[in-house]
Length: 54
Image 1 (cartoon, rainbow, N blue to C red):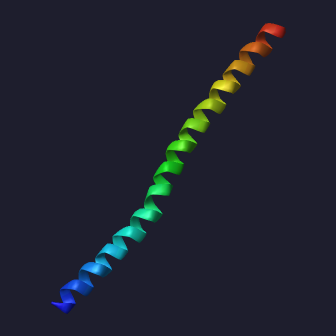
Image 2 (spheres, one colour):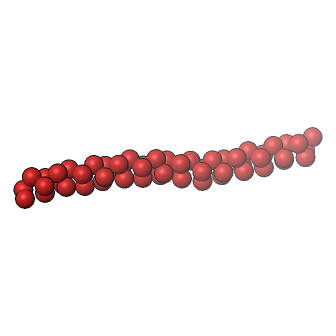
Image 3 (cartoon, rainbow, N blue to C red):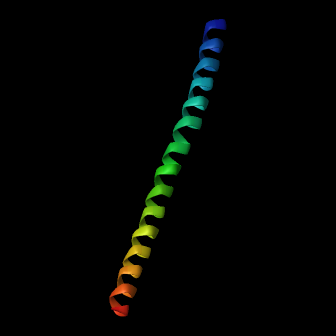
């Protein structure tokens, strides 16, 4: 009984630490993709404006 309780506590702690390390990485990657898309859109708009000024 004691080994089962200790094992379940250790597994719960491991899962909590694992999730707290993995979820920020996933969120950061999606944020990077959105930021990259915004930068690309800004560069395209700047290129269009430069072509109109020439």
